[in-house]
Image (tube, rainbow, N blue to C red; front, side, top):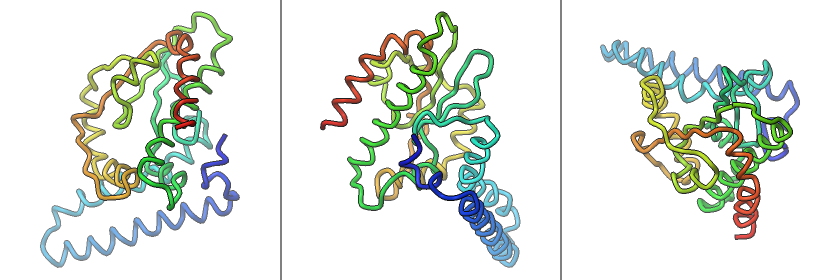
Length: 224
């Protein structure tokens, strides 16, 4: 399933070396910029720079660590699910870390966008297959996405919901992270419109009932 995710094709020692380079680069950059801000009497900028730069590199450490300790699970290379909590599965449509390792340098923008959709559908189908044999699970699926539109969400059995205060805070806190993700997706600098980011919810049974539709949509995308 993760054969298209270059990070997980690396050996354990190679993965650790990559993460160490990320951490060392993060610390070096913050020390250098901290010195610049100190010399220019802009000390108040230091905590903001630290926080925003941390939001960019965090997925490169948090996602592999979450997979290793079982708090995160890949349903496809670009669809990650948190560990089920209170009959709710929260899904994430790939992080900056995943985009970095999944996209090919030669892909066009349209190819990248299609890949995101196909892998999201692959992940949903995998999720359905994991739970299809169970009846009346009562599980709710939730996903916050800046890629998924309302029309497609409705087709796969999800309805829009208003993000809560914590979600809005996290979205704005991760503004630079989202900028990097969208810029990778679009192959050019792209500023995210956070207000257009939407959360969707739906019961797992409704999603299971849409399996045939998901398979048809997945086939159409792969043939286009």
